[in-house]
Amino acid sequence: MEPERTPVIRRARPADLPRLVELIHEHVAYEKSAPRPPGLAERLGPQLFAEDARLWVLLAENPDGEVAGYAACSAEFAFWDGRHHLHMDCLYLAEEARGHGLGAALMGAVTGLARELGLDHVEWQTPAWNEGAIRFYDRLGATGAPKRRYALPVDRAEA
Image 1 (cartoon, rainbow, N blue to C red):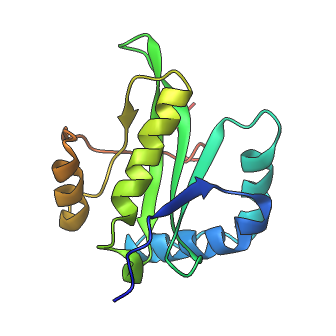
Image 2 (cartoon, rainbow, N blue to C red; image 1 turned 180 degrees about the vertical axis):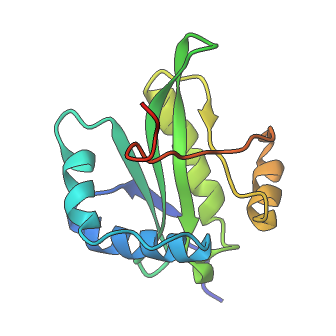
């Protein structure tokens, strides 16, 4: 029996962009969201890899070294608290990568990134129907708060 390899979590590099976009499209489909417009890699690359980038993507590798998941984060200001926190916009693992400790390793790396940035907590959301994710986050000791998320396209907003 082979010993289990310690999960590898690392920051995304420009060469990871094609695989990252594949995982994003899987994630979009998993959450039954509308497909994203073409050119995602071209839009993401400059945001992720600019010298002054304020977005971070952490990647999880499966034992054979293939990128199997990601966590995407940015600093966000909480007006009521008067300070920044790390907002985890997405955490996704390919189906075959789940249940092997990669999710917990990604979350550990996300909290490590928050500490590195001098931020004292991480916030995120997950769909109410995603019971597996909710159980996972509860096991980590995270607390949830019911809230409804809205989006309003600016071309439809009243002036």
